[in-house]
Image (cartoon, rainbow, N blue to C red; front, top):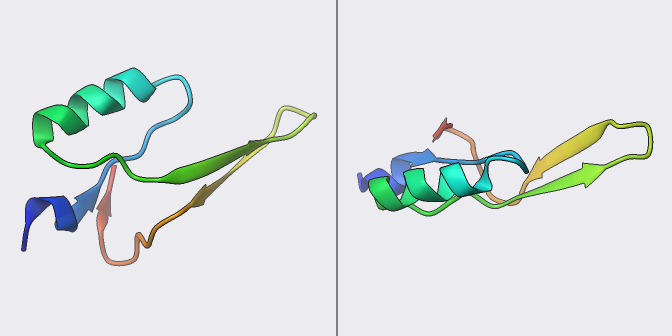
Length: 57
């Protein structure tokens, strides 16, 4: 199995630069996700690709 297919890397909103550096080093794409922020300070994350059966970091 290709290493880019065996795991996914995601990041928070404040660590995008670090995640991009890690993905460049590992030669893998950064995972796609959507973060919704609410007025009370809460947030919700939804992954825009399947993470089933994969290692996620």
